[in-house]
Length: 273
Picture 1 (tube, rainbow, N blue to C red):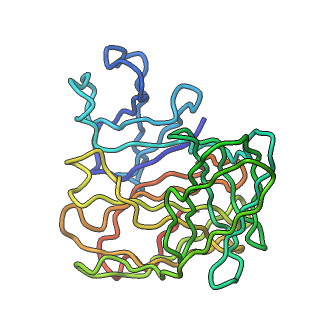
Picture 2 (tube, rainbow, N blue to C red):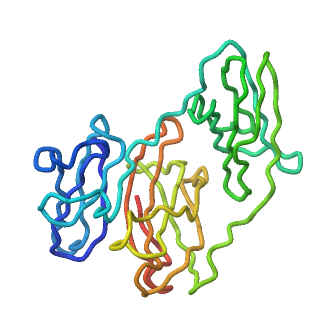
């Protein structure tokens, strides 16, 4: 079971429903998000079973939706574990930037459109996968660097490949304004390094399958700290974000929360522990 949460106007009836199920099973498969008591009114939580579905959509109201498009948000509760692949050859991937190793780069290897390996580089910028002979593509994402998407990788034997990333400091959207958000990740009293995915929507939570645009995909530091600049506004649809904290080893979502960064004064610290 994974705990999910969202911030909505107080007094709403909210249900999560598993992707891949029939809406005809609405009554038996829906899970209600419970609004918390004061002073946390407007904050809703639920426990969702990842064995039922990894993607759940959020609906307002108790009545069965007529279509999936009525969903206002979604919860991806299991992004998939790290997987070093399976094959006859050992393929080593070095990730660098100006000949300097890049630690914590997230590497996804695909054969056609199927993911066959998902790994993270170590302290010297290296990750190894096991692959059979074939033509693959590699996508590499790392904080502070431009992503490499679908780079060709041909495997016929044990081999070492190097991919070089270009430094690209985070440039938050210019409108309407930006603020610095401080995120501290910890489990119990222990600060923890985790992957952080922050998504947003340009049209607002009430008008779309919310939070599909990636604003940030990277990691906290070794002390669990992340400082990131995000746009803020009181206007509808701007400054509304979904934060996901993901375990680097298992790839599973540890914390999933949506919130609003309403103005500069109230967004200096967003506690997502």
